[in-house]
Image 1 (cartoon, rainbow, N blue to C red):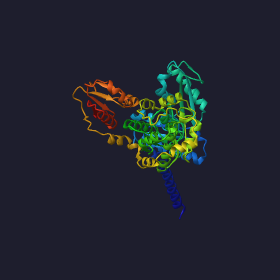
Image 2 (image 1 turned 30 degrees about the vertical axis):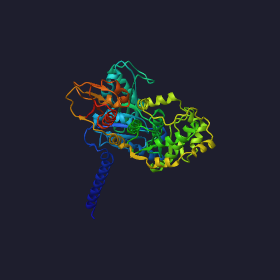
Image 3 (image 1 turned 135 degrees about the horizontal axis):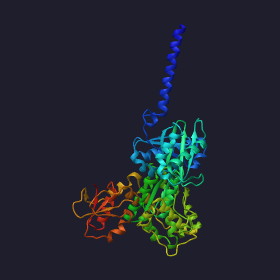
Image 4 (image 1 turned 135 degrees about the vertical axis):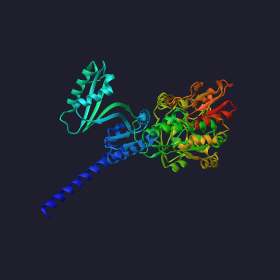
Length: 526
């Protein structure tokens, strides 16, 4: 090879390497985000910060937690945008979407995903100079800064000819002069303008929202929560979910279809809001005959303790089917007679499985306040719970030999039958299952033509976010968990159409009302 040919060959090799590197960089930074980096696009962007306890884990554990959190975020947000991008990072997760109209929906969903300390809505643009950042800051914060006391916080990554403090002084001074702010105060300002400068890009942080905290759901082992639908069991289930435990639900039907409907609804609510869309099971164990056996054969004082022991026996036998490593109950020390330390020890003695009690030291008002905070209080307050056994003088200090003596009178074939007849279903199918189980000949109306009144039975939060559009039509808001108590007070000469959005829950409740003899009810399904 002569010298000229060598120069040509080296030049061609250089350009091949250059183009290869350029292609690789494009694939690395542009392709994963599914946005054209060559265009001046402004996709919706969120930055997710991890729960602090995640950041102190060992490298392999932290990596696994972040991977699970990315998976959960992607599952949840795909309901709003099939093409959403969730990109992992050691310090944060980046979310990109072109569906700008889904911003509120994204925020509402991210608020309820365990593992997130807080997240930020950011507007990203190229870095030119500090004056360019000022112009963008005015777009985001100009109106808020007028007559306000404010501060600018700059975080900087990369090589620049200025420090973060230099940037804060320049941007803050210019904003004060141009926006009519009253003063700059670095401590406790009325308005904070946070800005990240990352190499040649700028993140204008327009909104910061607190997250749920805890560990990503699914990062810990599965558990089986014994849920009755009241304040205690719904809060205990939420607490295990927020700690990363994949929480399945187990309901003991002590008698009554209305109770089962209510428990399925609140379980589905918990999963839909806090479950990160992970697949879990809902198990119903028919316990009517078990209760009957206790009432007929067990001494009055020991009935409550023995009923709890029967529940733990049954739950211990079905938990293996969902790979659960522990049982969860809503018991709190001394809240009722069966929950003294002595009684709890006797109850736990019936199983070798680990029993978790997240509420063990909480008082009732704390539990009720937490239920209000997470949204399960309205369900619990109106739950048509069936009382299985009521002891006149329940024991608070159960003796094992007495409990064993009373259990010797119990026909355990009844318990075996209950476990064998347990129904296991996916939580996603719970409401459809209720629809099939209690379905009647319910009239469905697409477009009302008479004097029918539409009743929105959705949860108040959902009804507020997405109000019904039915101009000129009389409407009432009666959440489904209060419908049973409210219905008898309504004018029974009027026809009511129940609305829930998809028509499943409205059909369930319309069918249930019809089974009680009410004929002035139908479903509104526009």
